[in-house]
Length: 265
Image 1 (cartoon, one colour):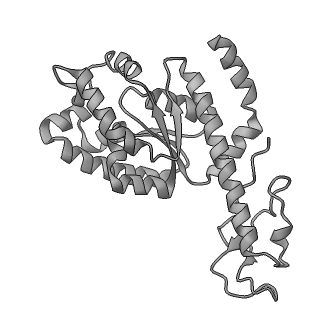
Image 2 (image 1 turned 180 degrees about the horizontal axis):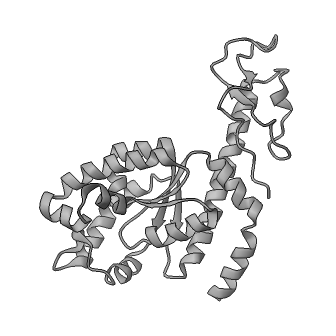
Image 3 (image 1 turned 90 degrees about the horizontal axis):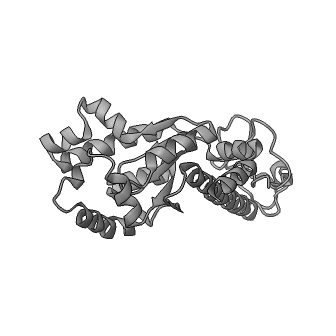
C-alpha cells in the first residue's frame, strides 16, 4: 500500500510544481523543527534533493564551528553554552537561503531563533508520536539529553515542554513510521498549499492598496501570467501614479518582485 501511494505521490510532483515552490521561496529557507527522532535530517536530505536545494544540518555546522561533537559540547560546557552557540550558528545559516535547514530539537525553543526563522524562513514541524520517536532514537547513542536511566520519561517531558512551542511553526506535518519519501511528499504538499495561500493573500493586499490605480502591474493576473521580468513594486516610492493617490509605482531597478504567482495547479 505504501509503495502504491509513493508511486502516486511521485507522479503528482511535476517539475513545474517543484519549480514554482523554489520560485515562491525566493531567498527563504525551509526550516525543519521537531524532537530528536522526528526525522529532520533524513526527511530534510530527501526534501532538498526533491526540490533541488542545498541541505544543511545545523548540528553538523555547530560541530564544525566548535571543533567538538554535540555530545562533547554538552559534557564539557553544558546545555546553556551549547544553546548560545546554536543560536548564533542558525542565525548565520539563515542568511544563506534558499536551502533546507534541519535544526536540533531545542533550537526552536529560543525566542530569538524563532524570530530569525520567521524573518528568513518557513518553519515546518515534523510532529511524531512518542512510540515513533522512541523507536528511532534507540537506534543511536549520541543523544545527550537521553543520557538518563529513564529515557522514556525524558522524552515525554520534552514533548510536554516543547510541543506547545513547536505548534507556532508555519506548517505541521505528521512524521509517521513509514518510508521517508512518503513524509517528503506530505511536506511538499503542505508547503505548496502554504505558499499558494501566501501568494494569493499578497496579491489581494497589493490590489487593495492600489485600487483604482492605472499602472501596468494591475493588469497582471496571478493565476494566469507572470509580471514583466525585472519589474518590481517599490513601496518606498512617493510619486503618485494616478489621481487615485496611489503611492506605489513600477521601478525596473527595484529588487522587489510582484507577489508570487499562485500555484500552477
